[in-house]
Image (cartoon, rainbow, N blue to C red):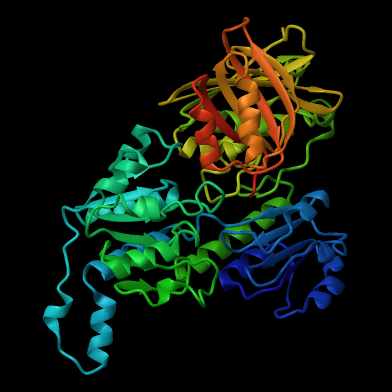
Length: 527
């Protein structure tokens, strides 16, 4: 087969490819030039600069796999690739050590004022007392996000004799303890940590994770590190806190946007700033090249790739039965993860009815995808969901029964964690997904991208008042369903809404005397 390498790649990666197939290196192609030649190739290797657009993929009539030598795949149109039956693979583990070392480097540089001292020396100065630092030994490091990089940072911080606390709703106490991490909530990290580092993906939940409200709660003298994604910290708020002396220092390797031309962090005092170097080491570049190339070879040979970032095609034998339930089960996973309010430690998947006669392992992977996709910087799909869940200590149980009651088929997810237990079930009717159960209440509603869920006392005027609060906030309700066990008892209401619901509006609803709880559920994802 023929492989096109469109960006510079470590020679070891090229050797892997050439040992199996014909390889052409064509660096610096324009989009038109790439579109003109892509139809000749079975595989494409890129890094971050070449944009693999839908227009280019329209000419890729032979293409089987795209390999991205790096973590993200923002430069590849995943939807177009998936529709074309093209597997996209990346290399998410190759930069773990480099990113962890960069985090420790920035932390030490802040603690010992290395960058400022270096600049002073180059100005011909000798001001030793001006650069008195602090020791990290015995201090507390708070890590938000305990994936591979977060765990690797913890391992290295223990070597510095630091106390390590961390937060990740999808990591068990036992898994954290293997890396010397004590699990706590985010509030405790804000209040207790001397150094805080984040290792989370950027999405609606994590954008501005550390903002003005969180900075007000920080321990005096804290240092902040970001080697994850730009936007997790509110850069303006951090810059102001540095100027006001509320925090001792900040070290950023990533920004929003990049490069950070007008960011206030550039002129703030007590900073160490680097231009997105977390994965930029010779070793990391070698590892990501090898990881991407090995997967391309696997896919061309008909084997599964370990880090495919788009869903695999279903076999003809299972597609008719399973395919309609895959999107439903992803939605159920998203719903239960948000409804539980806390990390899922144990997931039980019950498949009932006609579906029980088939291999439903892909449904388990779909449920895990929905649960995990906003908890990791890695794109979660039907191939790697089980692997990621195992790494995070999430226990998965699968059960089947032919008895689905009044349904032809039914998928039920039971999620358990530190915050309790949540149950959600769904089916497919007329080819469309339906939510049919939440906890002990049975209902029937088409899941919407954005939903407001309330548990309230079934009293006259309660539903109207909730609708009025949303209306006054210019939030449009597109559909509604109500479930209750008996009149004047507790009721569960689902509202499909067209507009974002602010925290202030949620608080208004929650403060209504008849409302017991309220959730905003996103059944669609921004990733």
